[in-house]
Image (cartoon, rainbow, N blue to C red; front, side, top):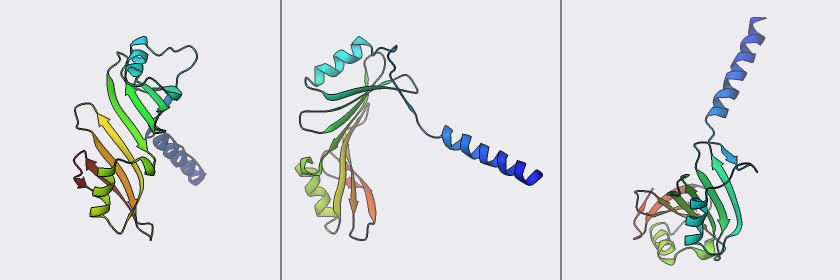
Length: 152
């Protein structure tokens, strides 16, 4: 009797612990409004927003997810007061900035670029995050500065 009960308790604890470690976003429901100041700030930067979708994070911030006019997926996180916390732009491989692409190819000629995004965080210089892979599917994550210096 002890063994099945112990297994049940262990399984329940694993489920609760794994669920608690996942950062959740809560979709904005019909009753929740995105503050006007947040919407105005977003529209100041981007006049055209394709497929705009708002979500609310578990700490009360607002996420704007959309595609810009260059067909790049973007996510911008706002505080309720309208201040931008972070921006993420995901580039299609054909639309990567040329100087970033050249820096990666020069440092990792045997690898191919599989993904690239630009991150802007409050208080930090903008940087790029790229994923490169070898033919044997070995992958590396790279951080690249605006000037093209790379760190793994």
